[in-house]
Image 1 (tube, rainbow, N blue to C red):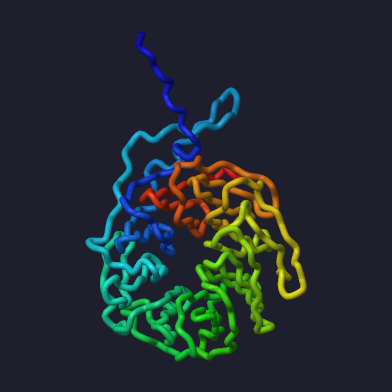
Image 2 (tube, rainbow, N blue to C red):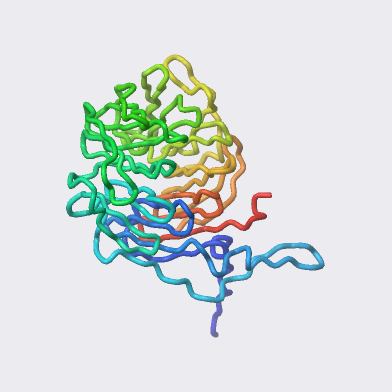
Length: 378
């Protein structure tokens, strides 16, 4: 007797997300400033580019039943345009790219380490006026039309057009991470167990603070008092810039790949534990003060690999080693399933500036953009 299996039901992720196979692990994700293009840095040095604009966006496929008022999303009917790849491995995989102007991206070249740029459509070009020294860290300063670039111990501001150096300073330590404050007036430059606070206006070093740990990410608080960093040695590093001192929250079960501030939730959250870890602002656990912990989502048996704070709401995206992706309200147990586990770990998460799109990169070479309908969070 012939046996038939029922058709596989479509999940929410199938209906709201676009997914491509880019063949190799995604190391980092970056939306451009206009929100029209997503660039994915790949482990082999290539860059994959996909358009954020969607001819069959979820909003265009929403249907409301006249008798019940119930909303549904019909499946896509057309194939997705393929990604555009750089012609060769062009980008250093160990230095994260940044935005360049409204449409483009800046990155260090894979062979020389010199500053290059990419257009929204995937064309890669040398920045002819840039220094020929290898770039070790980057950060965009869009308000001034500049990019903060580290060449080892030298920190420079360069023009978005051409890459010519506008101003620079020699620091006492190498720099492998740069974080710009929200108003772009201050630069935090980390490397070799030190963080230097540099005023961008005149490139003056205001403070140099000792910081233990191998930093994987670095971010300013909205009030510019705090720096938070996730560390490879299973810790969160906190720097109180006003005091000129640092402290560590230790004994995480795993490396803390991401730690971020949420202005809407007035909190800081981090990965690396069996649930999203966080504390309320303005005072964080420092010295003898234990801080005010908050609980986000539900505890589980799997470690949270990545968190990504929503830019406009008190929400965060959370991913696990199984490939599971959830959406959580910061400081609350509420959770929404975005993607079921795929068996392959997520390797990068990023929101677009308007909070409409969540980019997900995987160790298996999967690249997705989940686009949330406008009425989803109402």
